[in-house]
Image 1: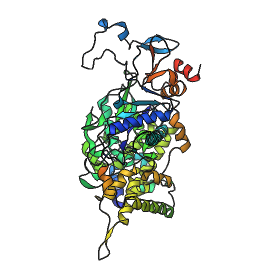
Image 2: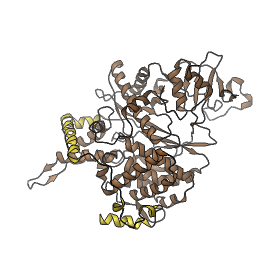
Image 3: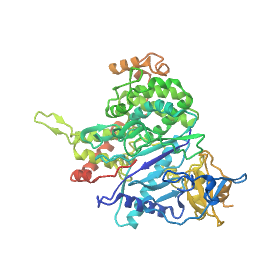
Image 4: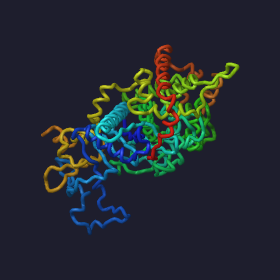
Length: 506
Length: 76
């Protein structure tokens, strides 16, 4: 499968002090995460990628720059790959932007007012689930250490809304061939992003950005999607984000940044959202014209329509003038994607995709073990019946959707460690994709088949010589006159002579 | 059931790939292979019941306060 990574911004709260500053708490949580890493961590490499680009919009003429400013000129040593020299810098770090690069290749840091786990690059949907689950463990271990070291404690929530207007994201990143025309990509991908909600949605109590209407909807994120295309991620959020920051060889690759997805506490939705989207991207790269029949007439309106249709029967207007339900569009995408399943992992994705669509089309409740919004709706439905009011004729009315009890369960559903989703899983009520012992290993070990192996491996083996690391760089301090920047511009490349020597202990 | 099958047949002709799924011309429901076995109904109900009891114990009194105090800053 193509290279993929998932980023999760967690909700954060001190249950004893609701007014506590979330930026400060997140920063201290990253510090606690570093403590848990027991020295096997490094800071983030922000520098050196375009040293002549001035933040004020000007660009220094290369001819007038002094030699030591030219940190982007790679010094090619055939035996060592591309290595650049860079001047040493101080050890100061901005506490509001604290980072921990970890031995599993991930980045745990403060983003806006949330702690964020950006998982390492992976090459299968199953590995995406594995390192996503590892992120939850890492965050939970950091929270436990925070409670020991700090004044106060934090609870972490793997959700996307507070029900009062704020949303924070769970983003997927897919490596895509640069040769694909971006507007064609966006137009062919949108129908999938809009309709995949029926199996990726985490469920939400409340309708509207501020939950101004009572009710239940399929997706956490749907009400915050306000444009088809755009650069923004924090306001007027688009279905397809246009940020062009490939973290890889620009001439060859794009990094498609998908911001419409929900955070998932169940594993099957993570498996499917990554696996199905990667397959649809393969169909797009192959210029499969069958996708054109599925283009939606009004994608932004359709996001909300799909999210509110719990029966999965409502027809979405297509650009062709016809209409199709989200399930019908997903079945059509499944049939198209059968042609692009390239390996055993893809075959598992296809099989799971088909089984989940079949269960949903028979009766959504049949998918309660696999689909998060259904699992949540089933629990809330039982609770509504349990708290129903019965009138004098014996007619029962379920608890109303605006009851605080239901909103509270919705939020607590996603709490790391002891949330209701975790308890449902512990009771054997949800399907799992990966084993606990594998997740435990992924907390400290990086994927072996991407450049994350090098980043994580060197942080694990020789943190003493790592000055910093980024997605496409590892900065070494080997006691020379300068820092040495090892460039990892190909995300598939899991081997590098300089880093392999350090990892082997040579 | 009948209504949904009709909708599916109508969509068949215009959506790509539908021919393969529905080649028999039967409604979708009849083509579906057997689902993976779900947990036994009674067992699943018991597990949910104990979770519902736990919810009631933990939230009867403070649900409203909990919801009011869960305030997050916007993110990406």
